[in-house]
Length: 140
Image (cartoon, rainbow, N blue to C red):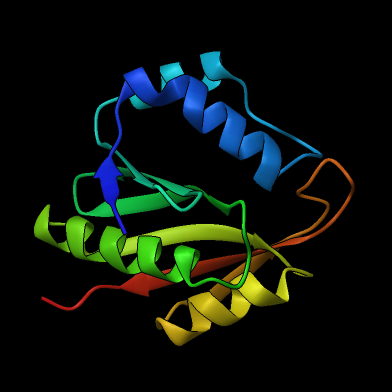
């Protein structure tokens, strides 16, 4: 399994993957190009059909998106564990994210890695769904 760190040259690939993973609200190539050009961005791309974007500022980071085209294959967990190692190596101490309340698979993954709920954002998503805010403190 190959996982690479992807830059702006991968924007079209990431947009196609995002459209499969999130057909109700896909990000386009231009959005990925703009995001990947920002300082502090980390994008991991798994050849099996997964991606992750994390933005770090000083000692904090936000998981912007993680998606897989073939669920339940361990792709998301693998990407997230690699991103946590990369973030720690870069000096990140805390990672934040939002996850849909009804996304039980993602919530289970985050809980298994030590993420804890810090709040809730009512009607956060375009469909009116709520989001939980989660945080993880990285060790050393």
